[in-house]
Image 1 (cartoon, helix red, strand yellow):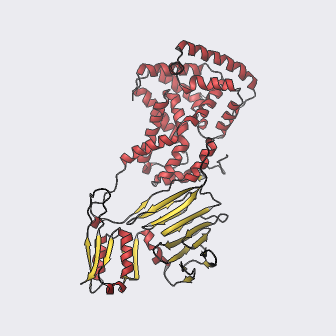
Image 2 (cartoon, each protein chain N blue to C red):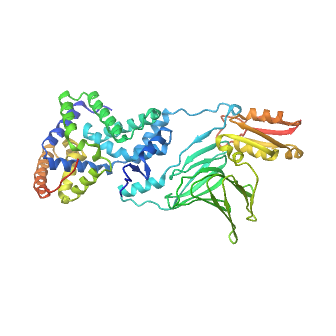
Image 3 (spheres, rainbow over the protein chains, first blue to last red):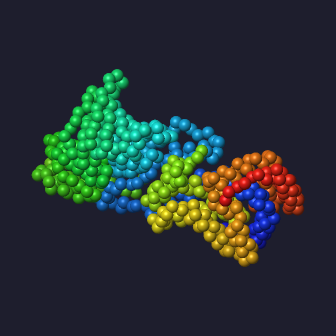
Length: 328
Length: 197
């Protein structure tokens, strides 16, 4: 955008002449005035423009065909509203909404990675969401989780980090743990990789507490509030956050649910008797077709049929890919 | 609010070094925080070179678009402020050159940039220098402060101010020199203002 050459020459020349004529004190005041008018610049609007331009630069991943789709972990940072709103309060005197809520959802077929304002890293499994109120300040680190998440909590002895999942409250100071609380399931499970955790299960009246140590895997029943320890490898429970799908004596009906979430497909089991068949195998970064092949190979009489959904569908019309599990 | 803890710059409660590393890793939020912290200062700084606020905004925005696209090659060496201001300075001067601004004028500009306080990056971000300057400026009688800010700095040209106010260029020039006279008189009382830089 070339402004007229002569105008710029004249403007700049005037400006430089003016400045040259100032005393030192006046130059200081000129600099101070410059510092003052930075408040008039709309950085928010400018950032939106910058984002629009950078969007044109980055390549978007294209999944050409569902069969070759490799479920990947997307790193999607949360907007750090809390930190930014505090900064705004200092530079302008605009009132900032205090108790706003920030929510982030990882859809079916995708796992996501987010970083909270305090530096805590959160991996969200498919069909999971995390919610917290802003400002997310250090003396009030509380989030609520639906679905499954693996958290690596920034250590801070003075400020406990609390996770609410259904009827369970998980309190930690600096830890790595996994919490699973899908709304359709009747339990909440917590697997502790590192650090220490206090569990609190309550349904309004009674409260049950338990302390977890490294390597513990506890299950909390939503209905009764009972907390039980299970003998399971924590590594197996948290493998999903490293893109590893672990089946460990997992019955087929559960495998079906896992596949639905992991790959975003709909699974149908046509024969009831097949549901209890157990699978034990590990998949790392495998596309769905490969997983189905291996599952079929490892079972004597079960057939897995994949039918891709339609791409380029009209908006509003959902055509999922489906997997039908039947007797051979 | 004092954002400095020990000697490390914190933006929004997070150390700048950490934000830079995260930005390099692709964290758009870190990028946003850095942008919002530096953008206004960089724009006014650039406007002191290209004497046009809109152009200054474009220059700084283009720099950040490039920065994001190129983020993997950014080396975090602890002097982000220096890197930002030097880059914007160079882009601004290139803008003048590509707009065929006369060599002599650019040379005069470069001379002033070496010595004048208003080209010091510390004026444009939250530093001790900026705080001192603002404190001193706040002591000015309102009328003086207003004249000071209104004259050369908002519009960056008498033509624009004249257009804005519907005055002739001559009137504005007279106003400005009047303002300078008042300024000098009123500032005499502030001889004790000592600023470090």
